[in-house]
Each structure stands twice: as structure tokens, then as C-alpha cells.
Length: 267
Image 1: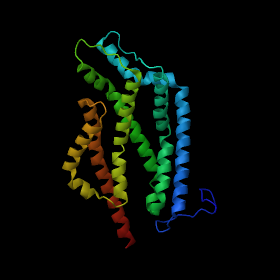
Image 2: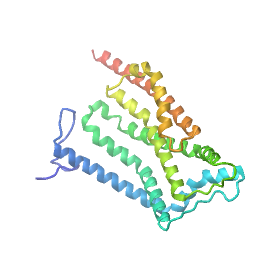
Image 3: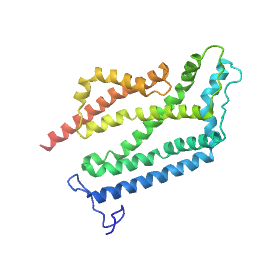
Image 4: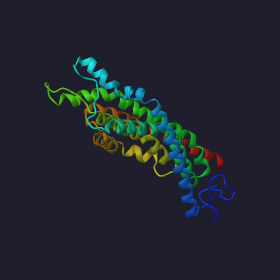
């Protein structure tokens, strides 16, 4: 039996949610999307490996700037204590960077996988979905990078005045990677809310009614998922998420009003 891949003329054409895909078609579609995503990540990893020294210097810059600003001696350099740590650190940076570089492809493949379940009017949001998802993730990564200096200063201060900072490269890179990932994923919050409103799962009125509980939840989640655990990073994460929550309600109200206008014109 011939497997239905995209581009195959035998593949079932899914035009509406009523045109159901079989289980085999779902699995074939999922496999195709995963393969393309993995290939995009591999290409991104190769690019980051080619520019590894520049990427490492970029990630180390907040720590270096902090040491210069505080005039700390023997500070700003990273060390490794195991023979394999240099290799594992290089692979970690390449993997983090490869995923970030492949993010547009990953979001496009995700959208294309869920498209068969959407109506034709909802499919037109593909480009805004991809662009906003990538843009917000990059914005979250930038905010994490920007708050890294104050976060390191806060964490170092807890060690005491007579303790000298000398970071292990793998643990430093792990912290930076987790910070960027946490902020980037958290900044996808408004995309999810707007999408759920567009498909009718949520309404702006529901979100507006629960705004007090939502803000409390946002600050609680920010405190839990912030890898460094410092108040600067937590506020830098919770503040934009609160603004995004309100903006998503505004976008939902505008979309709802346009939908009502179209329905009124149709009748």
C-alpha cells in the first residue's frame, strides 16, 4: 500500500474539518513534519558550530560586562574541570542555537500539521502565527539576555564578600540556555491566547472577567519557571506577560467585532 506523503497525488486533500484524515495519513503527516523539523535543526547546528567562538563570546558578554563594571579581579573567564566538558558544552551551544535558528521552520511545520483541523477562514492566520511566534520568542530571548547581568550579580552577592566568582562553563551555558528557553516559551503566551480566541475556545469577555486571577497566576508562574530565581528576572518575565495578556484581550475584541460585522452584513 502506497504511503500518502505531501506532494503525492494519492494523498487525501483536506479542505475542511469535515474531511477527516485516516490514522495512517495522520502518522505519515506527523513523520513528514518531524523529519523536516529535524533537518532544519541539523542545519542550524552546523551553522552555530561554524561560528562557535563568536557565539560563546556573545553568551559570555553579560558576565564579562558585570566583572568590568564591578572591577572584580580574576573574573569574567569560564573554566572546565572535565576532559569531556569542552565537547559537551560545544554540543549544547550548537543544539540551543540550532533550535533557535530553525524556529521559523519548526513553527511552520507545527502550523501545517494542525491546519487540517481548521476552517478555511482560520487557515489565513498561518503567516501571522509563524511571524508572531518567532518574533516573540526572539524578544523573550533578548529580555533574558538583557537581565542576565543583574541576575548574575544578585546570585553572586549571596555567596558572600570574600568569595570569588569562577564559573564552570557547562553550568554557565546551561543557565543561559534555560533562561532564553524559559523567556522565549513564556513570551508565546499571547499567541496561544489569541489563537484560542480565534477558534472560539475562549472569548475576550472570559479573559477580561478573570484578569485579576490571571495576573496572580502569571506572577506565580514567572517565579517558578525563572531558572535564576532572582527578582529582576522574575519581574522582567511577569511584566511583559501581563501586558501581553491585556493585548491579547484587545486583539480578541477587535477580531470578535469584525466577525460580528461580517455576520450582520451576511444577513
